[in-house]
Image (cartoon, rainbow, N blue to C red; front, side):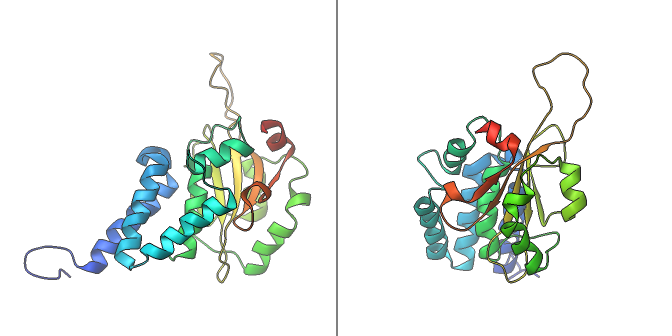
Length: 216
């Protein structure tokens, strides 16, 4: 219902408008303007929710963790995966983690908390060999949020969340599609590069697969 007879939206509708666009931009960052757009949408939702100071504190926490450089979150990822063509999905996962903590992220499903922490604790063993997207989905099920779209030709990130858990577990995938060849090729599945959690120093937050180590 509108706040008055002028047709202007009320505060709830304004909040829903900005939150919806934030969630759309997180899922398809390349279509919305990448990192700067995510920050602008988060600025807007923080303002409506009266959480400007909390959002700014989260941003400073990124810098303190080494997850934000002069080139933004993109610059931090370039340090740990310099040869990774991200297309915005990995960067979006950092902002998705903040959105989850602040109650802004709309998820498709949540995992039991024990399953989420087990994946984090077993990341070294679980990433000891390469896995493709289909294999990961068969084992873990659909993600809480798919960042980067479903086209197998592009990189993507699967983010998993649990009720009561403040952080996300993110699995970053690289495309195996060869954009440089003119020869016909089959649609191969993206391959897992790293399993990342939201806690601690950014440089220490990822466990890499053999392919992820090669990208480094």
